[in-house]
Length: 452
Image 1 (cartoon, rainbow, N blue to C red):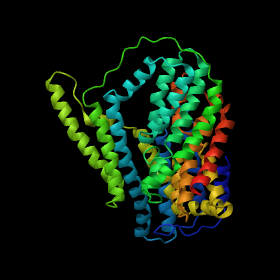
Image 2 (cartoon, rainbow, N blue to C red):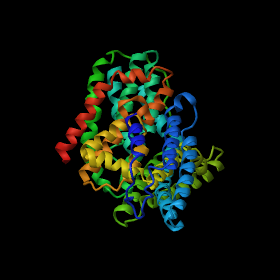
Image 3 (tube, rainbow, N blue to C red):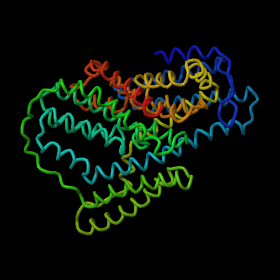
Image 4 (cartoon, rainbow, N blue to C red):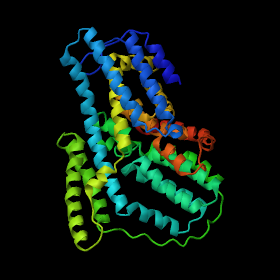
């Protein structure tokens, strides 16, 4: 709510020059400019209410982006701005979106391919069959989620391990509730120290504000962010043994291990394209996708001939998280349009010039608990801030882990609320917010001690 109040206050101020290669319009005080802010706020209200309305989050933000840019174009014409300058601003956002969209599409296709080959289901089955006690299972699921979210993404990791917690927890609602809070914290913390773990981390890497291996400096702060609340929650876990399970082992399908190795190779290729060839990392990811497509053709031919179900790579592309990819489109162009009108420069002045980089970056994490971290981080990246590596890593950390403060603060939390069948709720998560906040503060202190 403070962010919305700040936006409404800033519309009355004059504009500044945009920090990119083109000038913003500086028309934030106009009636049409104020209207675009209200449109974005209304659209984001629908995004935050997705759990109740079941309206996919991509739909309102895409509409808002179109309306915002239509008004930005009219404002540009009224201000006498050339069409070339307008196109330069628009194409800047198009380039930003295209690079991230292609990168994420490849990563999602690999994740879907591994899921179809039973990689994740086999891992879930193994943990269920081992018959760990509740406390041991609490630790194992948290650590697995922490590391898995670094190479997959926090949503996938939380949903995968959440199925284990549900399967083992059974009717023990207390274990499921605390276990799901544990997964949300672990997934968000694990995604903060690797460029592949979270969209916001990926955005910072692709923008060139930190190199690939710089993010691993956040490993210890991220682990502290998870470990502090996990320690308190561990003591509340019942020291009991779950009911025995007679579930049979899930077998990996042919090619499962090979696809896992190819995914690691694709990550290495993306890093090499960025670090060695100085090309956008999505190009390396596309090379990895082409290899997966060729290997998928081999699997399709081989196992169709043998009478088994084949492997269709385009089916994996089809089942990518298109709602997330299109939501990201709406965010990039919606926030980009507001930036072109002049609002990001004003927000930058109010937060970073007025409060200082450290305070503002900590505030970004708190805002991320209410507003999705993707638009928040995209806004920060487009403010043209002059920050050193320590501050860019700080905002990467806070934007990544700040969403753990509330169950609605991250995609992992929202998804697990839907998966838990009312065993994990907003208020069951809110009960642990004080210790989660302690972990948030602890991670910032440790980051300062190690990297400051």
